[in-house]
Amino acid sequence: MRNYLGSCHCGAVKFTITADVRELTTCDCSICARKNALMTKVSERELHITEGEEFLTLYQWNTGRAKHYFCSRCGIYTFHRKRAAPDHFGVNVYCLEGFDPSLVPTRKTAGASMSVVGAEAREEWVGPRDEGV
Ligand SMILES: [Zn+2]
Image (cartoon, rainbow, N blue to C red):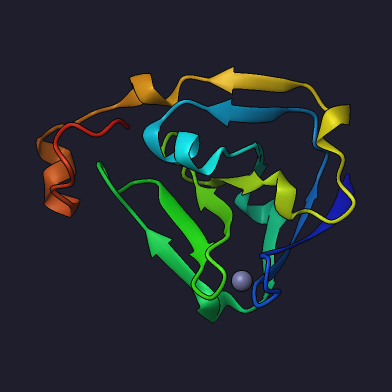
């Protein structure tokens, strides 16, 4: 296990992950595509917000299960609580200090095909009707 320091661009939000980063993922869902996100998955026990939790803003959409966090000051996506594995976070690896993404294999995930627009989603948030995931 290695310890990585993470931060948003302005430095208001700081966090650590303690994990072996063996795989990175991209995702083709409509939000990850817009963020051009390159992520690694860690369990909630492996991620700690060390500073600036109050600067984090939560964005939720569609089923409302995934929780997408970003810094309210600089707008940088730091991590999100995953929809399919809510006890895990996807972490923006470009926020990690001294981490070289070229040394770790990247897998493409097909988030767009996870799209579920159902009655259960509407209880939480109606959301845009034709958006993915
Ligand atoms: Zn920031």
